[in-house]
Figure (cartoon, rainbow, N blue to C red):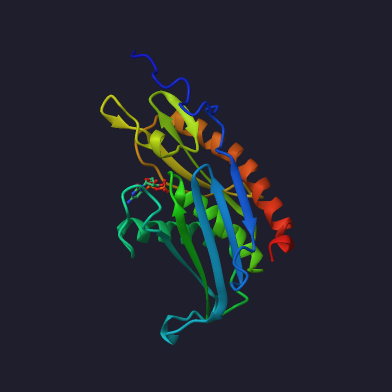
Length: 238
Ligand code: CDP
């Protein structure tokens, strides 16, 4: 069997080490809820508006409010400028983020309303969807939206034969034997430890997959701590 060429991370991080994190809540005082979540050079800002009456009326649900997520990368967030406006990738990330957050948000007390979550990425170095979900969960809590529990999110994966957490863009783009690295965004709920979202881009064996999920759950414990500390500090940013 060929030797593993990625036994040490170029950044000198341990295989199970998340990049340095920064989290702040209440960063946009005019919004109902807001937060920033950063990991390394990846930065996500989430702003919540609502609940407010949903228009047009035929889209309303008399049983519950609706969560709507809009994710976008700013044009200067990566080296090759991104064209502003929605695209297939941003539509997909908006949808999966909506699903992940909907599993913990309870809008049954707000029929016929919508809660809008806007996620913007001013700086991207991989892992933007998970950073966006971490920021959005804090912003929703800050807005006082009822949540059954929190969610925390992390990208895990495989580079050559090594299992790693929180791949950055360089690691995301590494190739070996003609195949790219494997990237698995995972969202974990805070209390019941359920998987609220899992996507898989690349190849991985079942035992390795199980191990990466365990790594994701451990990382999410650390991320949750950072999120909760930021929520406790909320008054200081307002
Ligand atoms: O950001 P995330 O890992 O959730 O999603 P991705 O589609 O796997 O993108 C990985 C990274 O590729 C992003 O975080 C950006 O750094 C970069 N990217 C880019 O340079 N240009 C794009 N149009 C989209 C992504």
